[in-house]
Image: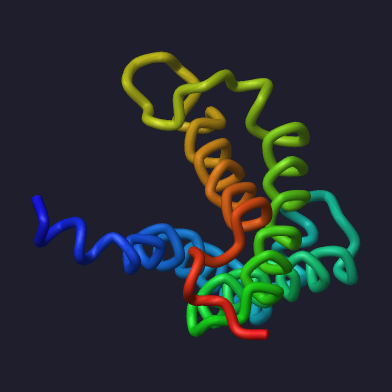
Length: 136
């Protein structure tokens, strides 16, 4: 157990890599197809571009904040929280909890994945960087 305890100051990287990689991927892949995404989502192209930018910056800030910039970690979480609330309330809530299509008929459109991402983003917003890793 002492070996694992010695690694605990680095445990935040598991959450950072999970959240940051998802948001970098989803943000960056929207830019080349803004028009199609806007049409599919029923939103103006400007809004989808803004969404892509916020997803990308949020993911990047959560990752880069791990180098010690507490403000960057918290801001990354702050940028992601409203995105996930929008995704949950505008799209996924109506399909219930189940995100894995296991015969429920919702085709995997539930909100469990989005809720998990929201909780991780809230963690980074509230907690920031672990003590001892923050830069001024």
